[in-house]
Image (cartoon, rainbow, N blue to C red; front, side):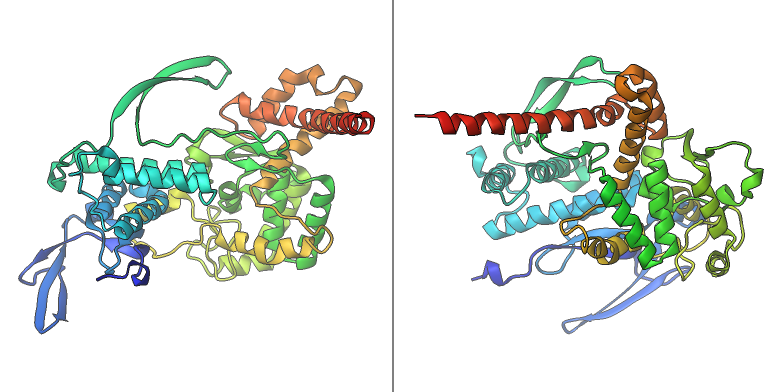
Length: 483
């Protein structure tokens, strides 16, 4: 008998580099030998790249590829093949595979605990089939409060996608004895980018888990690509003080860029040297505008193009001074690009980018340069925030916490607050349309509905606080006078 609790769970293992090869029994040009003992048997064969064309071969190599290993330590074949198909369909988005792999590992562990095979749909009662059992399990975890509804919804959606892949590929030989789920079409309404209500028809299943977000009336966050919390004036002051005490030039400048431009992490960390090399007195206009997006080497969310980062003079002066400093030059000297204007503005002390842009990653894939096995992807910045910045600020603000992305919301609210001061007694509504349009451009919003959240934020918080105070006073008085 197996003791399920003593067995190792299925896990996600990341291969530094995956190269697709085919097996052959004899050596040849470009083959790699495989020779090992399996029990008393000597296993020997050769591996050869699936493509002899050097450039085409680049598309059969994947960096940081996730595998799902079962409890025996072997790859879970059907799940790994689905991940591979997704990688081949979009090799430039490998990073999106890891969450999917983690969801599949969770599903595999659930099945293993119940001693159920992933492809066993022999039960006549549908609620005893793997997909329905997992749906019931996830719903139960949500009810207990041990799993967020959004996480349960995503995991179930991943499992549905997995079986759709199996069903649509004949070579997977997946032929369930009974349906994996039941589908139906429903109509949903939504608001488009300019606020018009639209209706569309979508197909859903009876095992899908709805994840309708409910807004907390007392929440201090703004939904802008995630729930962002604008820092208060005092928090901003203490944050800047902490950065000055810590004295790390690169991390301080990264924070200042986000606070003064609203740029996302990927944009800040992929800024190029050329954007700040022009002496301040030769810059034609202020604020200085930096073109971002595809073709510029500076990443934007969703590869949005033809957008500009609006940089005030004081910030530009600091970035220019840093770019020409000996500290920055020494870091660039450790890179192949050296003083090339397209080198990254921010590099680690070892000359490594804090975040590799998509264009650079794709250029490497298109060249004969060997694929690198690792990339930082902003991890050092996030670690610096957690280990150094937050604890220091908490000395003066005990419950303080933040994410780098919150600085984007802070920029948006700082801009709105300034406009409200300029508008005086009339408030922001006296020039609402202008403010909406300007802030939308500054923050690169695809929809002005997102921008409107910033313009309404202060007013909503003020009204909410007044309502809470008024209701508390009313209820307190009611208690006193009750007989």
